[in-house]
Image 1 (cartoon, rainbow, N blue to C red):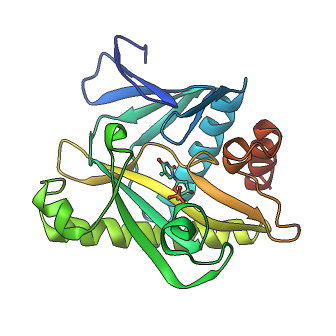
Image 2: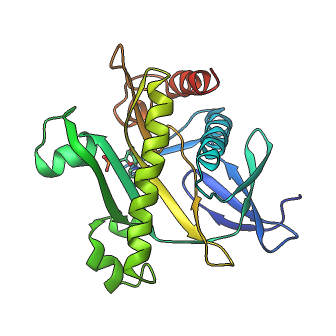
Image 3: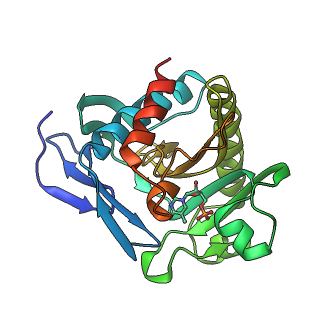
Length: 236
Ligand code: TMP
């Protein structure tokens, strides 16, 4: 399937049309941004690593009964995906308090949460992706109905159960992650975008070392080495 015209360019990916209107090509870029592009960088090979990691995780989730947009991987940086209408809600699932949650609520960094926390953020760079509640989602017509919101929460929790177990077997703690969903031509809600160390936090269970984009956000070292380690453990 050949790439045709560029449909959209985001911070980490480009989307291309194909000869089939129901299929797109997602190209993973080497660019890294943090704080809504306030901090920018690039790391050669990062896109290929995320493409491989995301492909593995989407396959794992499909096996666990989660429908995704992934059709197949084309090469190092490119995936063939189903065309969906992205729901403009970032679904963040948290097991351990860190990042914006600790800043917003003053919870001590590293605190194990008493239950899995699911949050919604409005996907809008110009507003810095603000946190929103169910009523905001309905008021702004971000979803069709409250049952869609319940489905997003259920899917977020289910993805968490599958991934948390998978990574624990590899001595990685899944601290939190962000997922996005889209609606296909038949109205199915599909897991979309990507799942990678750009969109998850992974802490080594034995050393507490961070193996995710916080390395870039906090200038802790080389992201590629960490992402390679995540891929190595996924392939174990
Ligand atoms: P946060 O602590 O900064 O709110 O991030 C929570 C999780 O969501 C973390 O794993 C990083 C991920 N995330 C993204 O992938 N994209 C984003 O735009 C934001 C804000 C968070």
